[in-house]
Image (cartoon, rainbow, N blue to C red; front, top):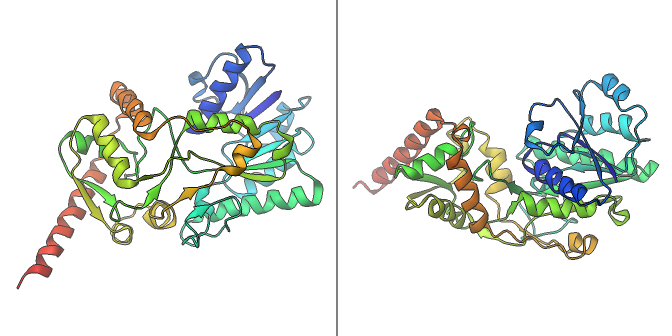
Length: 344
């Protein structure tokens, strides 16, 4: 297969690129091109062929892909219907399959049924990001129905790798500051009471499912979720992180509504429109399309490797004093409110 990835160096796409390159090294006939600005291509094997450019410069990219025909084009950085429309103009006659990423956050909030399948309605009034993904899907489905545009829509949920600790509540600079608070014996905020259900998927597991959809005739015209079958609570997530850091967890539970009301972080979308909801995914469709697929990385095992990697790489330990101070204020305010209510 001749494959083009747009992006290709993010949390999800790096794992897919690496697995494809490993398959290439075993002479399975894959040829992988990456179209991006080349800022992180050093993280990938040398077998990858670069097409360097900005996908938003449509005329330039059209010139650079002239003469190419691809079996698969996958865009990892399309977030809106306008991005999908641009890709349609560029690749409609140049690929046998166009794979595009939506998001599991697009499923209806609040959910009518705890078990999510690909037929669960899409509607998220809390998060513009999710509504943009729904519009992207609408455009692609319309083109598939009207013109047989060979699309496959992929819906990931919370997918993590070795470079970033996955969390529910963190600042704009990422998750390191929460890990630092645990290391320093400080309390950390968990949204809600920590018992809502969540799914964490390691990027290596996601990659195997995704590669199984590539060039798969049965996936054309379909939307497919790719997640682990393991379900954990947020209390278990934070406990596993603390265990990997070899420190006790000092959890403070704060309602998602309060967190959204007292910050300029996007907790209305990121929590109320996503992580505050219990989600359990039914991967029957994926397993039918990709026989033998199973996510094998258990969260407590995967997160231990992530924590070890982050601790060994100082460049991933970006401190966020503003978020740290905000956590202290929120915890102090909740303690003060409790004391005021109890005062006689």
